[in-house]
Length: 332
Picture 1 (cartoon, rainbow, N blue to C red):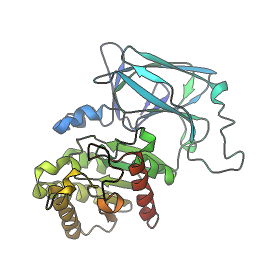
Picture 2: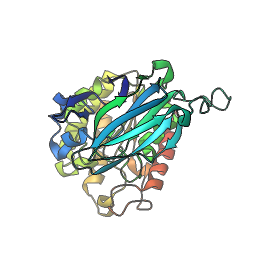
Picture 3: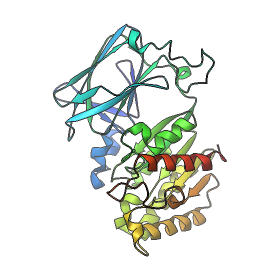
Picture 4: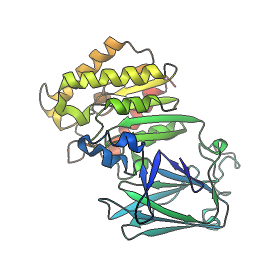
């Protein structure tokens, strides 16, 4: 959405707080109210995949934020077009100001296309502030900015929906997560709806995803609802895939069952049963635009697993991205 001439990527709605700051909602508030299971409503207000994008018109631009909810301090990553600039700006609960100077960012120097090196996904005139894990409220912007026009943004769009792994947990920074790496590999504008601990595949979320615009989608499903049992998982999976995939019959979907995790140390555990149920549902639906990927083929053993035995470490995310991109290239 566009607010104060800034493109708040992966934000569907903003609500004003009593202190004048704004809460960022990654889906409409009406849907957020339906995502209470496993604190999904709270994570809908998190910064996962949120970027502020704009073109600087004035020489200096100042942006003010404050860390909110459980966050005491939140880091950022600043990009000039495709290129990394810095990760030294932090947002605190007391409020912080990020000051950008056009002379130091030097967008013209970052124009790889002009020098004949490679075709960038983002034009170098687009400044991107990626908010890292946590909760941030936007306060205001000072200076003249303009939202990027479509010709300055990637031509293709990718949608990702999944658990904390899709939201880059364990990767240290969001840009190192497997889903962001996949979007980067295909030069896409990636909208990543990752819900830590709360990818519960609700009917309302399925209906929402079915209305989104994208060129292809990656759906990582199951790990956050191992407690509901395979039968209920199958019911939710059937509705979600039937609704979303059949609403976009001309688009390709890459469907991923749970990656290796603590549950796989046992025999006939829910993760094993869920993968079987995934196959059963797909055989029943016979979706022509869906590619099923067993999560174990992307990440199938404890090497590069975090000590929590759930999340891949940074190298684990790289491995998932490398293997997933290799599969996807046969279809995109």
